[in-house]
Length: 491
Ligand code: ADP
Image 1 (tube, rainbow, N blue to C red):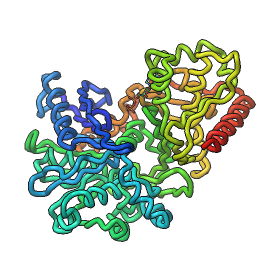
Image 2: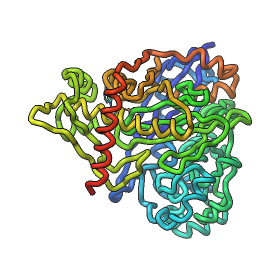
Image 3: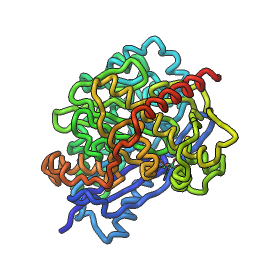
């Protein structure tokens, strides 16, 4: 009987389920949108029950449409939006508050009060103090429900990121676990000792009793008994880490960049963490058996979203994909630079307060130049993160693996290759997040024997080679740096 790994990718905007076969092909997928609520400016929440039901729906839909049964499923791999925080009642299994989504900033005041702990937090967790991560979100919920602290201390409440919540539900409350990659985004997990950190727990006054057990990413977590008695969950990882694995970035120095709404760049740095003093964070890439692999990560806030802006606000294009045709309709951007700092700048600058800018306009500037310059800005921001990674790791990056919606833009990928003077590699299967979760699960279940076997089934669609002359690269780089500086001055 043909068997597949079933992967669940619970993302911020949608939940997807797919079936992956031994050759790493995605056999079928099913998707459902997730609603976000914005109760106040900067707050982003989701209904945790909605999230859970979407998981059930996509699995049911997938099996119904493929005429397969659970007997065709080897194991389950789970990947998820990271940091999003859910607290539920142990007795009823019902959430006590909406899920606080990673982008949500309602707990910023808790983080602001901890400014003097920056170094401590960096050394233990690899993170910067920011409401993005789960710790201050847990504190916020405990402070905004009745007797929150007391109930947590009495062991009546349970905390989980999305993976923990989904596994808890899939196992009818039997599995209360997370994996190291998700734990490493809570700001409570010591990435050196691989344990919940008592000092950090004290700092946020969070009782340990409410935290799940932390396991390797490729591991038998338990049975999804709600679906079928002996259906194993064997792989769990946060979405960006899963994508790194799904891109076959298994060697030290391998880097991937995902071009979605924002852009997430992760570099495999091997078995020892590297810490930055600046804008890059350190995180766990995955754990297989005893072996832990670390990564450094940088995120660009606005990448593909700048193309949505061209479409929806500027009304220059009708579809994101049209941007390529317009960009190729001119020979250069005619000296135009767009800095899409709509919500500030992410890594390596972390400047919340600056806003977007356009430089170099002339009477000759056309819509084509403007679109081309906006696409260029995605590549230039990514280059800034990668140059910082090269500096910190003392490694020259000679190839970059890419995925995400905007990686389908050939102009953008060629420009990325030019500006980095590196190869840019597009995989055959762009669903790298689901692939990564499947690989992690299949390694633990025995569906694949080892990483070498997985590397063999990983297929490349296209490679972009750098073509731009070095003088031109340097000239562009100089102008871009000036544009960033000027953008940051104008506040
Ligand atoms: P997310 O997972 O963040 O929702 P996706 O990976 O689905 O993002 O990618 C969608 C983003 O990519 C959108 O912001 C869209 O504007 C951009 N995008 C999609 N196709 C293209 C394209 N051909 N050229 C440039 N940008 C694109």
